[in-house]
Amino acid sequence: MTSMSSTNWANQVKQELAGFDPKSLGKVGVLMGGVSDEREISLLSGQGVLAALNSKGVQATSFDPGVQHMTLLAQEKYDRVFIALHGRFGEDGTIQGLLEQYQLPYTGSGVLSSALAIDKNMTKQIWISRGLPTPKHCMLTPTSNFNEVVQKIGFPLIVKPASEGSSLGLSKVENLEQLKAAYSVAAKFDREVMAEECIVGEELTCPVVGDGQNIQALPVIRIIAPKNNYDYHNKYFSDDTQYICPTGLGDALENEVQQLVIESYKALGCRGWGRADVMLNAQGKPFLLEMNTSPGMTTHSLVPMAAKHAGISYEELVLWLTKNAKLSHALVGGRV
Image 1 (cartoon, helix red, strand yellow):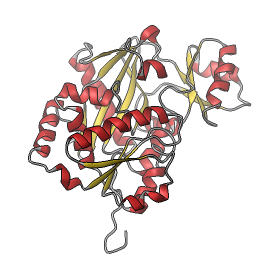
Image 2 (tube, one colour):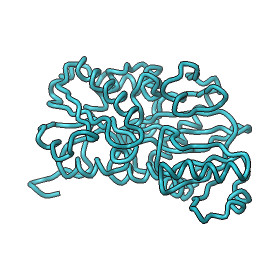
Image 3 (tube, helix red, strand yellow):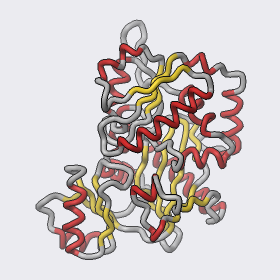
């Protein structure tokens, strides 16, 4: 099935964990830190995950690809890993590919889905091909005709790196001069830069878990950031950002958003868990922005917030995700 109430999902999780021996997971590696611009947040996520696993009696240790060479990963003799890396070389399919080679089950999406989801342009192409609503966009280069960009998208618009998260390098643009400056800012983070229609309205996020025929959208969260600026600081460090769950937008609209997020997740072939960011326009129509395949797990993060609203604690969520770590391609008799 592709949809069940979050209460039913929470009951299912509790049933799975009832009588489950955490020690049966063996030795678990928590991959954190890494080398992307989101390293700081990844360390916070990883430390939270590690503490949660240890509190449940799991033999878990940290592994930081930012300071430890990946060839050392095999020497640790892990039985499975929890990926708490964000951004490049952690959320983009590269680590996932290495773990497939090592035959180490891991949390989250596989190689292809991870690579697609981190590339906002490819994500949009797939969603558009499926008829899923997403803001108009175009890719920018140093030689782009910015006047044509404005004619296609209009103001206001958003300029952002095509393969970064956490709002790094993102700018809201209201005129041509700002557009040129915003391109320069985004290009410091990524060679691929996107200009995107700015949807003015409510900002939402919706986690999704599971794979195959068992995919569930968790409760939708409405985000109210100071001055409507949900930037890096307001995402992770500000206590002034408000998170409203339930959203107060009504069951029908929340259900519509959840079904849209499930379809967006399926379109990219995601598994395990993820989180889609969504904007509502003034008429209440939802637009998909992006899919995060390795969501944050900090004290300000949104997947544990939604899970808690559904009745699952941070520790239970981490244990369940780790229990369901898997490979895309398992070796049989020494061969795939």
